[in-house]
Length: 288
Image 1 (tube, rainbow, N blue to C red):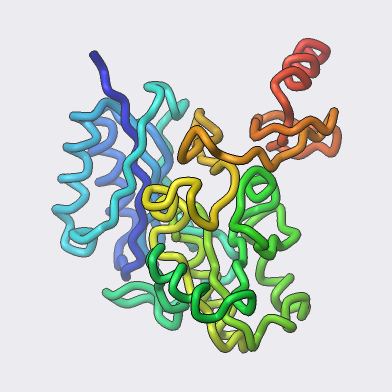
Image 2 (cartoon, helix red, strand yellow):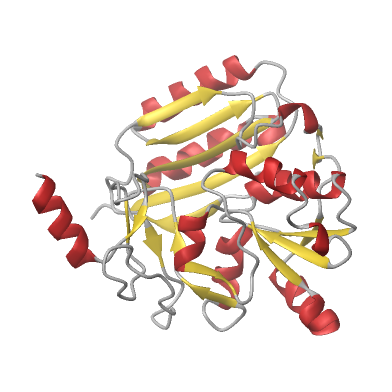
C-alpha cells in the first residue's frame, strides 16, 4: 500500500551559487519521482515536496547531506498521492517574495535582525504574563486568514506577501509599535522576514512563532489559541488539527459557514476563494 507524504521546509543561509543548488534539487527530485515547488535564492531555500514515503525519506537524507541544510527543520504531513501537478524548481531574488531583497541579510545562523523565536509553549507563557497586551499578527494573505487564525489576531489587508512592506510603511500599524507582537504564518518562513521588516521599522518587541502554525497545531491542535482550519499549498487546500476545528470562513457567494477554499476565480476575479462546495459546484457547472 502506498503512503504519500508531503514535507515543508526552509533554510535561510547564504548560497553563493543558487543555480547550482537549483540543478541539484531538480536532479534529486526527478530521480526520486517527487513533485512540488522549491525556491532557491542567495538567501536560502524554501520548498514543499511530495511523493511516496520512501522516496521522500531519501530526499530528506539527500537534502541534509548539503552542510548548510544539515539541521533543516522538516515538517511532515500526510498527502493524497497527487498533491502537486508537477515539479517546479526556480531561482528567485527572495525565497519569500516581500519585494525587499536588499533589506534581508542572512548568515549561517539564519536571518539577521529577526524577531525573537517562541515555541508554542513560549507563546502561551508570553500570553500568560502579558495578557491582552499581546498582539498576534498574521503574516499570511487574507484568504488564508479567513478560514483560520489565532484568536483576536490582527489580519492585515493583503492579497500577496508583496503588500506587507507598503502597508507597514504607511503607518497603518504604528499603534502596535510599543506592544509585544507575535508574528505567525504557515510554517514560519514568512515571519522570518516579516519580523525583521517590522523591527527595522521601529516595532520594539517582535516575536515569531517558531515552526509556524504547523508546529503549534501539532502540539495543541484545537485546545489552544488557534481557531479554525489551516490553508496549505497543495491539492488538499485545507487541513484541520482535530475533529473539533471551528468553522470561521464564510462562503463568498452565499455566506454559509465553510472552511472550503478553491483555486477558482470568484466574482472579484481572485485566484483563490473561500466558497462552499455547493456554490463551487454550481459556479463550475455554469461556467463549463
